[in-house]
Image 1: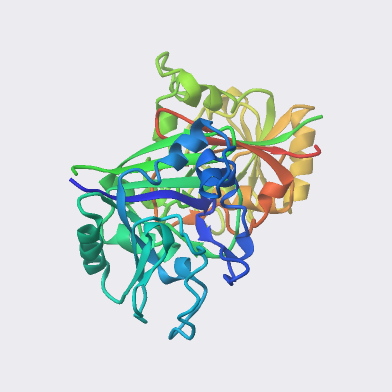
Image 2: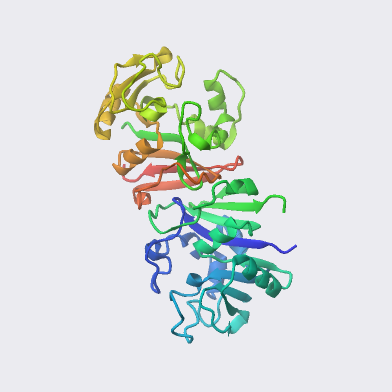
Length: 216
Length: 216
């Protein structure tokens, strides 16, 4: 049975998954890189950038779960790039470079569809204007029996949670207070009733919180 | 050097320290007892109620820190009782019973002073209408060289944090989403710059987060 999974999704102690003022230079707004410092040191992140170093330990074992058994990803438009409104430049293919780290079909949710783009390394971006259930149906089809990752950003994860479409979710609580930005937890009162929840502290200071859907 | 400390302060994963709709029957509003389940099972809590059972382990060692070396407590009026506005009943002395678990002077912050009340077991409630700095000055004097505990509720802890009056804080993040109530973290952007922060997961599912003031 294929699962719908969220991995390595960082939020501040006050629940913000991104800061205020997203731009091409600051994809996470005023949060900068502070939400992801725990990830940059891991072997998983370093190997994405062609480096063989990087730490093991609890942050690494959680980080590494990201890639295993995934056949497709769904992401919001903001994770693809900073543009808003109609596409003005079909040449710019997102801020993931010519060989994005996904290596699967990726479904970008947007109200402004455009032709699919095949990148190096097996990543193909598809642009879809549809409800989460329909996007998920297409992603599952493309995943060929493997799992589907919900890649974010904040509003995409929140919407899939609200519609009860997520089976497993790994959230990383980072001990900083952003004070402003986009909150992951809004509108999800009582979410814990649908999940078994386990928390693991890390020497890096973050807490790994894993949600596993009950009665799956 | 005497410290100002917060202990066993529970918040939901979405940052609420109390739910909506506080009343005499529901001191934490719609949160009920869900924020404090981790505490009820500890030896520390059980012994407060004259029972010799209760668990050890990580929840207990954190819970036990509550009482050590404390000479006075400061609390908000809502922690004393559910009344609002001028006191109408001087006979009712709070929802802590005739022998409250504090066993020290307790300073209740309120805009409606009333005479001090001496309870059994060493607890004396003083009612003060003053700024946090002045209440803290009086509490330190009463503590006779021991530490002062900031006992909550949410707005009291938040105000003492905002005024940089807290040296150590133990927050317990409970993996539930309350969705509404009073948020601990509002208005405290960048708090992490003043503290060393350490997180420890517990098999009970909660995470113990300890803030230690830098350069104290």
